[in-house]
Length: 506
Image (cartoon, rainbow, N blue to C red; front, side, top):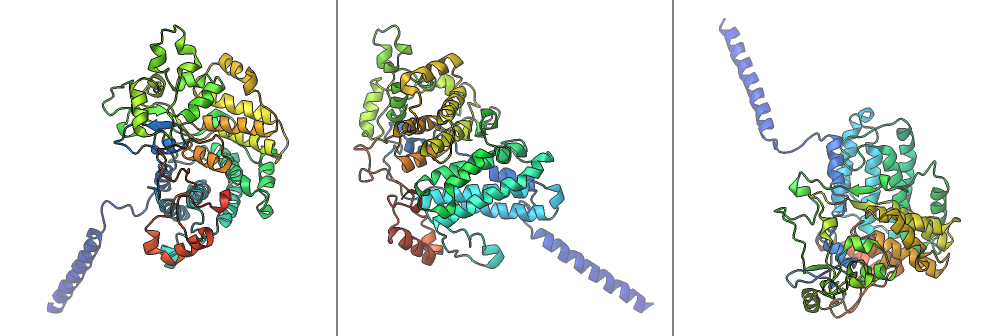
C-alpha cells in the first residue's frame, strides 16, 4: 500500500513539474507578439508602406511647391542620405514571412506569393533608383544562412532580375485571374488580381522607360524589345489605361490619422497660407500652355485680385509661382505682398478625405507609351497616347470635356510629332500629371531627361547643382563596411555623395 501511495505522489509531482514547465514557457512568450501572422495581415502591413503621400518635402524636390518659412527646411537640395534608409529590406523580410505563412496552407492563400514577388520587385527598384548598386543576391539571408554582410549587386543586374520577376508574376497571375481568385487584406484593389496584373505590367513599363539611357548600350537587357512585347500583346499583358484601374492611395474622412495630409488637426480649414505656394516650375508650364488645371490647383494672386480687372480670375496672367531657387526670405516677402498664388483649398480640402494620391496611373502609362513611340522603340500613334494621358489627368481635376478639347485644340498643345519638340511635350505633360502624385517619379524623370528644366538659384546649397542620388545609409559603414566600400569604389571611385552619377543615368 505504501508503495502504491508513493507511486501516486511521484506521479503527481512529475505531472505538476511538467505543468509548471509548460506554464513557464507560456509566460515567457511576449503577449504582444504575433507568432503565426495571417498572410492577409502581412499583406496589409506591406501595402501600408507602398504609398507616397502628397505635400511632403519630396514634392518640393520635384519643384511643385515652395516653402517660404525659414523655420522649415525649404528646398536647398543639400540632402545627404534619405530618412527611409534601407527600409526596403524591412519590407523584403516581411515578404519572406508572408511566404512562410502561405507555405503552411498554400491552397488557402492563392495569389499572395505573386503579390509578394511583385512587391519585392517594387521595393528593390525603390532602393536601387535612390542609391545605385544595392544588396540583392545575398539580401535577407541573415535568418536563413547567417549572412549579415551581403555583397552589393551591380545595378544592371538588379534591374535584370527585377524585370524577370515582373515577367514571372504576370505569367503566374494569369490563371488566378481566370479563376477569379481574390485575396484579403488588400485596401488598394480590394483583392482584385485582374487590377493587380495591370499594375504589374504598367510598373514594368515604368522600369523600362527609366532605363532609356541604357537602352542602346545594353542590348542584352532587351529594353526596347520587352517594351514592345508588352504593349503589342494586351491580352497577355493588360495595362492601366483607365483611371478606374489607377493604383492610388485613398484617405479616410473617419480616421484622423488617415485624413488627407492637408486637412488640419482641428478640422478648421484656413484658406490662407503664406508659407506654401506652388512653384514656378509647374505654374509656368500651365500658364504657357493655357492649362485649365491651373484654375483648379491654385488661386490667382492677391495682386491680381486687387488690380481692378473684373476678369482677373479667368486670366492665366493672374497666377504666379515661387522660384524654388530664390532665397527663402525673398520668397516670404513676395508671398506676404500677395505676389504668389496660393493653393485652392476648396479643391484640395473639400473633405477630410481629400482626393486620392495616385501611385501609378493611366496618365503615366499613356505618356510612357507615347515616349516609347517618339523614341522609335515601338510603332504607333504617339499623339493618341499623348492626348489620352492629358485627358486622364484632367479628369482627376474634374476639368470639363469642353475645356479639355479647347486645351488640346490650342496650336501650342497639338502634338508636334515624333521629334525633340514632341518629346518635350510628352515629358512636360507627364510632369504635370505627376503633381502631388507618384512620389519621386517627377524628380527621377527630370534626372533622366532634363525636362522640365529645374530652377537653380542662390538658395541652392549643393554647389548650384540638383542632386542625382542619395548617400548610402550611414549604418552600412558600421555593419557592412567591407562591402559598401567596395561598392562605392567600383561605382563612384570611392566617393559617396548626392552628386555621384549611377549606372542608370550615365
